[in-house]
Image (tube, rainbow, N blue to C red):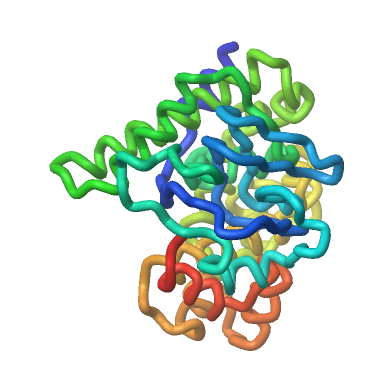
Length: 308
């Protein structure tokens, strides 16, 4: 249990957004994907997910880890309405309406609330993505469901202390999700592997160095100096402890940072690419689309258009 306490204490949690949505028309996203983790609370209606179309019942929650592609169906009768994540992002307003009235949360026949957030070990490693776990169902957790509703309610109001309460609720959500996983003995092997992050300070040094130098030289030669191991061994060492090679990890961190900049700044795509270590804008755009399934410009338009 001590290791898990260390995991929770090390997590840097960042709220991204929260919404209450009403369904316009049923549809399936065959490869639903987001950088942030998403916790979806179904109020009324029907949601299924995964290749086996597992059912989320009213009052239950669907947790989709950031960076994980998942098949998700909203509503019924969708035999001929299957779309890609790209199509969904471009046309969200055709499928959902955002409810801005606190009193109507959960009242619509087809509605759900969600909270999107980051949870990173030492503000560097996406915790749930590092477990490499699929989307999963959370049931019988009224406390967690209430936290989702409170977060959405605060997001809809412009009151003193709004940001602070939202951050507190989001941190509580992360703790409750981790506790749920532990209580139900889910992903035991992945959690055991994840605890290795806390047993080697050299690995933590690497995480921190990569985070602080995403726009610079992060070759194995540089990393070997940070970890004080040989250049030939640093890749093997990193993969042995994290199950991913360092250059793949670095690219994912760079792309996550790029998404953050697209969401929060008006910097050009060219400048963002350079800031996260890509001198060639065309190559950056190709890699971005390969990782997220949509062009960088469309990611920005999605955030500025409806933000739902």
